[in-house]
Amino acid sequence: MTELSLGNIEEAARVVEPAFRNTPQFREPTLSERLGRELVVKIETLNPLGSFKGRGTDYYLHGVEGGQEVVCASAGNFGQGIAYAGAKRDSLVTVFTATNANPGKVARMRALGADVRQVGADFDAAKDAAREYAREPGRLFVEDGEAPAIAEGAGTIAAELAPLGLDTILVPVGNGSLISGIGRYLRAHSPRTRVIGICAAGAPAMERSWRAGRPISTEAAHTSADGIAVRVPVPVSVRWTREYVDDMVLVGEEFLVEGLRLARDTLGMLLEPSAVAGFAALLQHDLPGETAGTIITGRNYSQKLLAELTSA
Image (cartoon, rainbow, N blue to C red; front, top):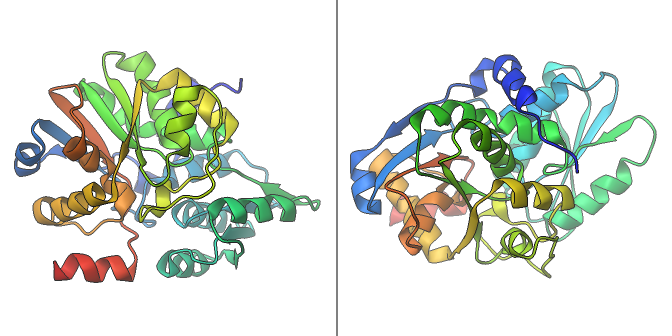
């Protein structure tokens, strides 16, 4: 098994671009009251990408030799991270995304310098196309959920949260890099903290895989939370989550919508659905822990969602 390194997480905490590190984390009284426990929110949206992805992508490309075309698949945020880190290093970046990807995220990836190719009906079909394209010499395929450095960079979030000694941390789960990096660090530095992953009920592949201990794909992924709409799990990521995650739960679309409105009304923030997966989990499930934390992972919402949130 490819291991995640505590030393690498600690290195990432020093070398990742400062714009992505030491993000705000605080208790919001009204939000805590509405969710029935003391809740710490970790805000990962106040950076050039509007998401946490810059931590892992910057650390990954920190260790990549220049001169290669970097190829990936993305629903939008990961591709932005690779494009941003690649532009810093004068690296050519090609991102494959689904034909129905969030247009705002596609535009942002292109603005950051990526060659974006929209191929396939969903994220996993786009990933197959990206992998095939990268077979040519001089092209380096990076897969979110497979490259340890991506998870290790994301694990720097846990290094910032660990001193709080939370009972529970609630983490949205897409390909699994974020929760794996967080779980790896907390196992060593805050073992009392229970790590719980949150998947959309319409995209349960990672939750099913975690319970079975092996990758289980689904035929489709139907959720507004495109950042966690995974249909085909990455095998190494499933192994990481089995080792570092205590539980996984599913949340329904109605609870994600309620979570978005809760973020709007208490934090004054308009977010993308995957960012409020932790809120949705507390609204839908009776989870353990008097003190909990969750990561506000991204603000790159669609225009359709913006219209819904500002009219309701």
